[in-house]
Amino acid sequence: MNAPYSPSSFSARITRQVARFAARRPLPIHPDHAIVSFSFDDFPKSAATLGAPALEQRGWRGTYYASAGLAGTTNHHGEQFDAGDIVDLNARGHEIGCHTFEHVDCAQADVDTVMDSLDRNANALRRMGLSEPLSSFAFPYGEASLEAKRALSSRFASMRGVRAEINRGTGDLNLLRAVALDGGDAGIERAIEAANSLIQAPGWLIYYAHDIQEQPSEWGCTPEQFDRVCHAVEASGARVMTVRDALKSLLEDQT
Ligand SMILES: [Zn+2]
Image 1 (spheres, rainbow, N blue to C red):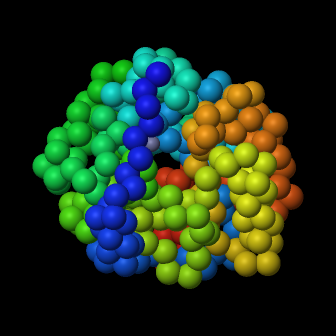
Image 2 (image 1 turned 180 degrees about the horizontal axis):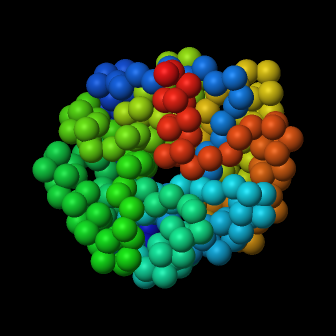
Image 3 (image 1 turned 90 degrees about the horizontal axis):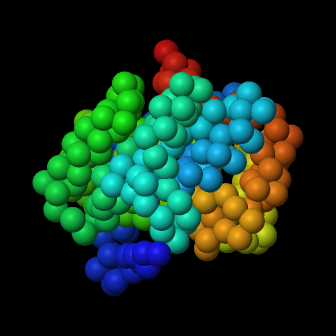
């Protein structure tokens, strides 16, 4: 089991603050009808074996931000995805996104290292059988720097962080906000409240999850907790789309 890495130094906090407010790519988000996207990071096999069917039974699809360097390994989230999961999820209409090859902290690594990791991830996923381009990106640990936001901006249609808010008003396509499906029942209640709030104030709510298992990691949830969130989203009446399709819909609203 690999020990989880935690980017928590003082300089990392400063970088994070600067990155939040700079190098933005504004997206007007005023949907008549709320949108929810479910995403999974890294990603653990359980996100495919338990997460995908829970979405599909409701006619929904999710976005899987893959770090191909983790494929076939086991870490604190449990067993990670393999090539079969990539091909299978893609064939069933889910989106595969990019999360760097080695799960790089993009606020600490230099831009060349990050770009190299993106190329390696794209090549590895292609070798696994993915033919679709990677248009959505999620920053590992949600960590972005000014330089990374600028450098990656032209490469991806959207980039996601982990700031726990709903995207409303003017969003930042270089650092979309996202609500975690973790933190035990208290965390799941916050995620459900976010879905409930869409009824009064439509926006684009992106969830991100990791493992789904009976004994989840600190960053995971149980199948029952995941189901509760799906119920709340159903009750909100929001449209559920992959990140790629949600962005397409929001851009179409503007024309
Ligand atoms: Zn990650």
